[in-house]
Length: 490
Ligand code: BG6
Image (cartoon, rainbow, N blue to C red; front, side, top):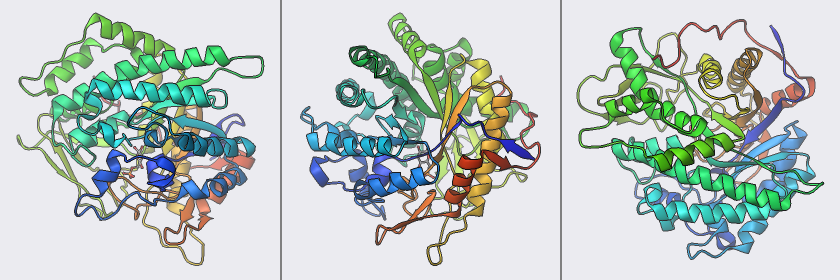
């Protein structure tokens, strides 16, 4: 089947500061929580050098443009820009000036995320649960908007807050490394969303109104969420319940907050079901008012999609997580007492890291956003496939990645045909980089990075994307996205 990709559909790729920049101690960059986290005994890798985007950004951005990419999402490192003592680091701003200027010189639209997991170490103690952290974030946001607002048209306040919360408070794989702290996992995104969303929006608006002239346009502001399908493994009552409970924690709560500006009664009752005894959950009028204003002011929504999850009833009252961090298929386990146990389905292929390859989940999530929340422009801000890769003479035939991208782009085109306003797709990632919990052996890049020498070369997928960007035509399999199972059923 031949699919046409609309001319104005943005094809891009994504990067993040901590995962790609390296140069951890350069030009006044202060420590982030990840520096300390990856320096702990037995960690096995760190982010000090990463892909050295800091010294290769011109080459990387030029290569992206030469491969037809018209946009990049990149995150800024908070600890490069604002020091713990509250003063601005001009060298940090100057680095991102150079990056943004390079994007503009190559006709690449930068989508700038203020934050992608790398909290400055100065706020490590209580993290996002401390009011001081959000106050500091707002000061940082003000600096960013005032400095870059005249050149950057798209900002993201944050990438993937739920992943940060789930890994930080449930699986213990991200700092602060807590396990099964459900109360905190529920409080953190709500607490930070409220302040962050409202204040960022008003700061951006004020900065924009000052800067908008005949020659500049006011920027737009969005947030990206890892929005993945959560399905019952079988159509049994117990599996349906497991899927609903898993979904409220990983999707529904944040989608309600960010897109609707309130939590429905159903959402609140599901949160009540999963919270442990003694943990309360209440919202007040002031919070609802702020969330409502913030939701109404959101200009676009970013969807990060990699996999979907199939849930069954937990086996007993014990939570267990076994992380497959080395890409040995079949070694992972995920079970949270009182919520769900995630399993694979025989008919759904998985990656070496046990992630289900399920493009229909992306199609159905896009439909869900469109049907259940307000119509808002959507970008797929991250999607991609992690692989073990070993090139021969600077040639890497990553056909599995091309297949993955083809199927997921087809899912997006299907959703657009069904009325969803999707404006573009960003491949994770432009270049190989650090995978937070898997190190450097899980590669996602369109461009291969030789970490020993810093040299890069395009993989076959980069050439495939260049061809797609030029011809806007793609071959796909037939009808893989037929809606048969309702996502996260009520
Ligand atoms: C996304 C994150 O959720 O998942 C990225 O925003 C991350 O930073 C990506 O790299 C893939 O995850 P992983 O664990 O395979 O690197």
